[in-house]
Length: 310
Image (cartoon, rainbow, N blue to C red; front, top):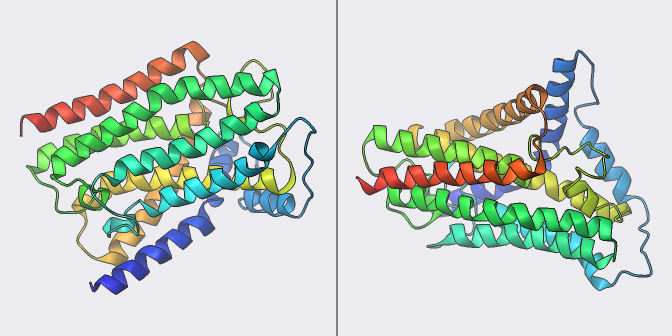
């Protein structure tokens, strides 16, 4: 495929991600409602919520500064930049260079950091508690993400994500399958943690002693809160794209339509699996969450060790 067409296809898939990301929470809610024997909220409820918030006015405390105002904007910007680094449907990413997976990790870290400093800027000890917990879990989550990418880089012989997740992976089929399966499992755990899903956090909770993400955004309102909600759906889509790319793309033919269909189908399955997980298990105690994240890092490390024997 010509380079210009590849760039155009990647841009189209990024726009598709931005347009369809709020659909994932709707699918998750529908799956959880089916498990509970309920009808559940409309599939497009997140779209309605974000649109309603964007039309409202924002209220700011006199104790906040420009940090609180710019936090949601920079959070959404950082997540969108990270989205550009993902090689959708096996094609070259719009932002691709050797070591771009480190840039992706830093972009996600920046989004998390801006949410935390905006919470701290309120001067509320309650929101500071949530920011402290978020930083605590990030200490374990970010190294696990880097280890997963190092395993993919070692297995594929490529230093860019566009090469790591393409069909040109090096090594035997058994090695590639084992490495990618372990990395996909680790990324799924990180997706649950980074997106404040059960068993790490409950996005619908209102219990003060268990809140993590939601407590950090309690003072945001109107368009600011809408941007935070939308950025959360984009990050959820981003992790799903990484998992689907790792599982599917090395085995599919180099046909963009087939890979695009596999990507969209994989994203649907990804949302369904999250709904099943949240319906079948309870939230972990806070002291157990770091153990879960260390387990994800161990899966990535095991995948990396398998590549050393190749």
